[in-house]
Length: 177
Image (cartoon, rainbow, N blue to C red; front, side, top):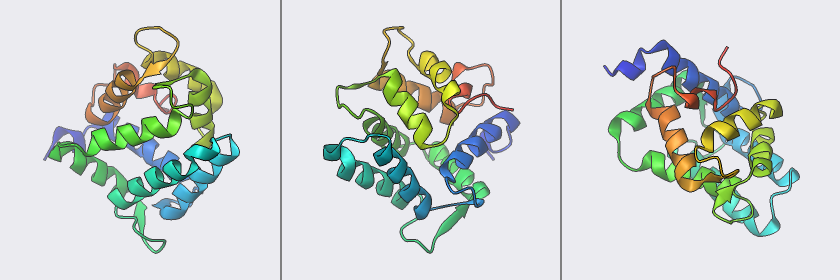
């Protein structure tokens, strides 16, 4: 058994992430949760020309989790174990997921994420906006005021692939209580 499956801090991070995927807060993650995320992004100003790509990316994430229709659901335990399985298998799943997430958040398609774009993302998945600047600054490792694709991928990789509790990535979804 992998150390990740038993590391309390690592599991705490992943369960926190699972909670943000459960948008309607009913205790399970479903395709309907992704519908709600899409709706929030659109209400928060997703450009019309990006709306189809947003939907495609969100539903691609659903499909990769096995949420291929509205009858399927994942408990927090199941989604966390699915994420750990993907980490342990290695390969490109994580990179594809991080690339899709980056494209969703980079609404102006300039190749970087501004603080405003990150705040919109946080609002879309109901992370308190006061946590947005803290995690944004942690991701902006070169201090240029934007998050590059490389910074974004490195930060998310660190969050989902490491159990070290001293790493700055642990604040991605706000402070862990």
